[in-house]
Length: 178
Ligand SMILES: Cc1cc2nc3c(=O)[nH]c(=O)nc-3n(C[C@H](O)[C@H](O)[C@H](O)COP(=O)(O)O)c2cc1C
Image (cartoon, rainbow, N blue to C red; front, side):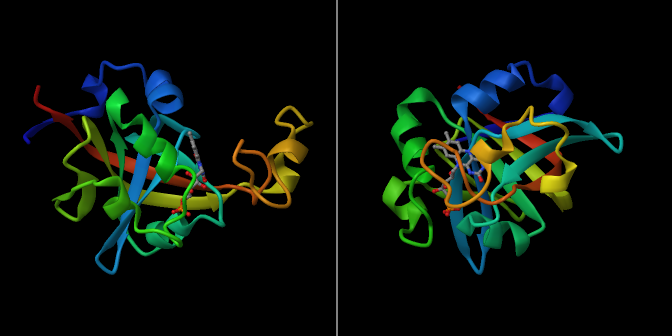
């Protein structure tokens, strides 16, 4: 499989559709193991004159350990035939199963950044800043913090710990050749 590289400014796909409809697999490597987690709460834009993504990761995710032990991660996009795999990586924890193996994904590397041969696009990211959302910083209750935070996290996305925001530079975007 060959991929070609494009600049973030040359991405023509709608970023809102990518995040909220296609979803990403967020993957980092720790001690030779890669763990994919489905993410749909993210933003993309410009900070510090750099193209960045900002991903909201709950502190209880196994993925957090992988993100915190690496400087880099990827956000990969798949075509619709991988929908079940994205559902699986978004409901099962890498604490319980080797998700790469169970999903039949093939890890590839761009430099140090792990991604998957099966993806149609990979955003390669270098961490710039990790900062927690804090209960006291929410203004009014427009976010319904009681719905989204506290207690256990549920399958519908409600409950759980206040997110950590992983802000990362998009260093490259790999697009699969058709
Ligand atoms: C569509 C979808 C989107 C999700 N988005 C996020 C997200 O943005 N941040 C997050 O922390 N968890 C998100 N999750 C939940 C995690 O993917 C899920 O808890 C996963 O099993 C965690 O895996 P891990 O423990 O191996 O890290 C999402 C789940 C689904 C199904």
